[in-house]
Length: 119
Image (tube, rainbow, N blue to C red):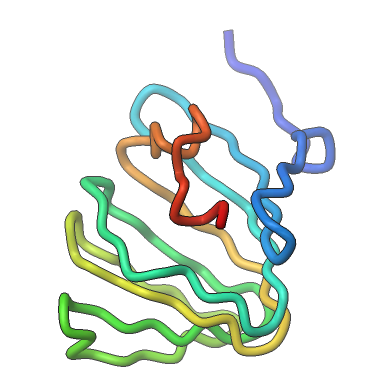
């Protein structure tokens, strides 16, 4: 049975003092709505999941590659597709609201083993 989901009814998780997220996922895909405070850094990491990031407000400065070879500022209304296993780091420039979509779903986010975000 197909169920309608209302974002405001999805539990918001306080991952750390600067990051909140709501997650909806199925067997093969996950979508998350996240809010970050200015200056928060997502440390350099990579994952098997293909990722699409869309910025709703604020700016995310991304670095891509093991040695941060590529830099990209993603502003409100802009989207990037991050291939599977590509190392990336991100800095929130201003308060940021964004949506990430992953395939397959991020199991580490589902089970809470995403320690790199919880420090």
